[in-house]
Image (cartoon, rainbow, N blue to C red; front, side):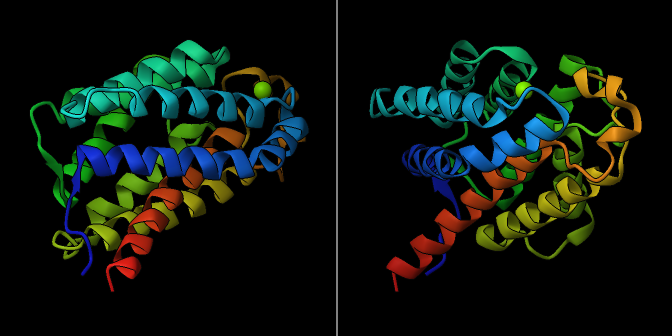
Length: 220
Ligand SMILES: [Mg+2]
């Protein structure tokens, strides 16, 4: 049986799985950042997700979905420096606010979550789609869900679709010039290199989808 929705308990397990996955990708994410930045993106993500994972596992058993997402964002932001700490932190917190009172995350709730994450970004970072930032991956995932239709009953397919779209969008940032942030000073030297934040966001979504598929498999 495919899980049709996620409880707060599932969400905590998913975030722990994402943290493990990000830890394995640390060197890769550092290498992407070294090409167009200061090479610390993998370290930052690993430190942030370790803090996030530790925080959500220490929450009381009855913590709701909104609390888990809010505390995840606060922990990530508190443990990391730089723009990405603020951006990802605010994205989780905005998702928590958007899902306030919800007991489970179904496919429609997941669209709400992703939409809130995208909406949180421009106000935090002044970016637009096409600026070669994490927003490109978030926007790509959202657009895929908006245009897909028909997947509302299947959470696993919804997350897989979003994760794959985020990955394609992250890859497409290699062809973009950076208009904001440190990389904007490098001009066309950034061409051929994807934005590390967009890539890490696609890894996060794909890890969530992978966790769901594993659940389905383990339940036979
Ligand atoms: Mg960096």
